[in-house]
Image 1 (cartoon, helix red, strand yellow):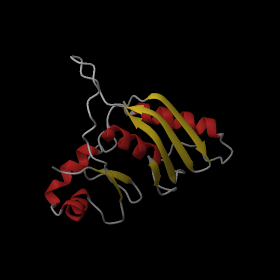
Image 2 (image 1 turned 90 degrees about the vertical axis):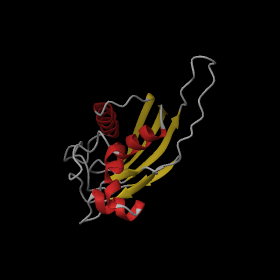
Image 3 (image 1 turned 135 degrees about the vertical axis):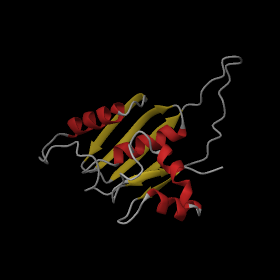
Image 4 (image 1 turned 180 degrees about the horizontal axis):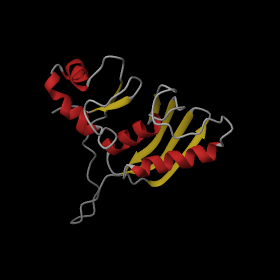
Length: 160
């Protein structure tokens, strides 16, 4: 949990030009935007206050949680996402005991002018050829490895 910062002027253009658009309408658009990527969030609740979004609900994996945060934050007009999402570990059918969440925390990276996924991979992993790891972690938001933009926030998974 925590607050993740985003660039207010960068991202998907979901909101109308009018500043008078109600927060409920903005929240509904963000929910639709998240679901448009195929993510299912149990009891998804989105509240918008000016340029801040609060996300709550439950997701199946930490990776999906981070992708949902990035989807909500990479919207034009949003500069901050407060994460109140919880990861609900899957249950083994045989013994009905929750599987431990062994996946470590992910980190986030804000794209700057001149960045490419290979440049980011070289910076965070020490190897430019690891860019597919970043690309895969950011699917379906990224459709092509060359289609990133300044201000976009990406999930940077650990490599093992």
